[in-house]
Image (tube, rainbow, N blue to C red; front, side, top):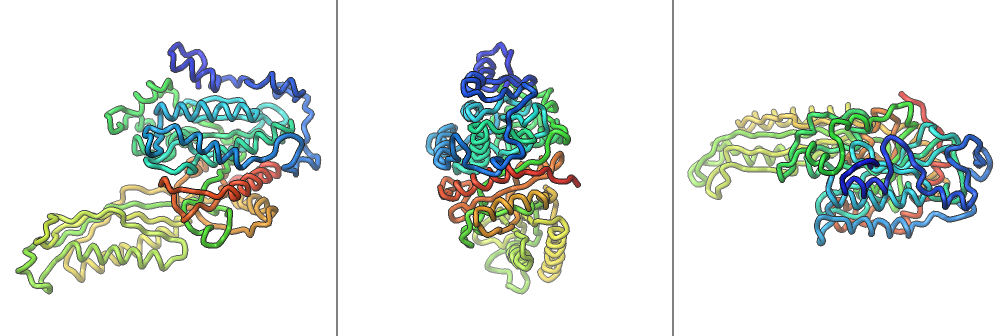
Length: 471
């Protein structure tokens, strides 16, 4: 968030996170009182290379799962509704959340700033200032009527791990940056990953003209928030500045809970195809057209939907979903002449997804021929698979095994900021189980003991981190 703003809004934000262009130490007095080495000097009394780097129980504080848990509760207070958690991009609730997260970052020894896309960033320098960073974090925005842990848990867990390093005055051979991405969910403007795409340098500036439900553009909303939309490309990071991006996140699915495991290593963020399917038959009188003479679009659509289920189920890691369907004319005594339905297909590799989609197309064509209807499938969205770095998977697996937890590898069916950040750095993810696999729902829940496991795994991963090779 920018210093130098003359507006009341800009002034209040500036005192929280400092300036975009210059990192300003906020906690210097407290650190100096303890005799902690300055991050701006050249001589460091770090513990690099000594046995203590392997320990998560150094002198000072300890990892505190309860604190992370409580902070999730605190962030949930910042919602546009009092009866349901909703925090969207560039809202006053986003500012409130950023202010509080910025405070926690500084308490953990980080220098904070807000970039030109509204991302909340804390940096903990390495043994030498200006070193490339290991980027940690997740997103701080939510869906409507959300749970308290999707996104927020990843940001707060990363802050906790940095705080432990800071409490023992420990510097690593790389910097750490914790990022609270501003808009992963895409609720307000219908475009996901706006914050992380800006960081990756892939933000599409035509999106600045997209409108929210109130008719306000992204451009206007950024200006009202105190950001300059014409400088959003300044948020882009160079690949040489980021060793890797690693995110702790709830699974948002039932696999880990079903297998009795607190955590797992993510292999890939699934790619996705979305389509609009249209079935054209012939409307007719429900009482006068014999069954054998009908061209029932809804019956054909039902067979197509069952084919999606059957085909997706025939592959181990493919999922297919029809979430919307409309029958026309929609009268109780009329055979439907037209049906439109949605189709979402996801898989952990692009070739696997393409194979499944091709099989569905072939089956739709066969159904069309048998039922004398026309079925068309139009693509409306495609996102490539983001493969997690094998080297990062191995490091996370080692950290998980160190906690005596069996290593379970699994793909992520949901999208995450890593889909964007992979354009500038290798990515990795650690999943924590969630109750019933429920997410994007107020019933979203995690176990305190799982948060503790996640913290210990992330802490060990950070301390043992080795920059992975790039493709």
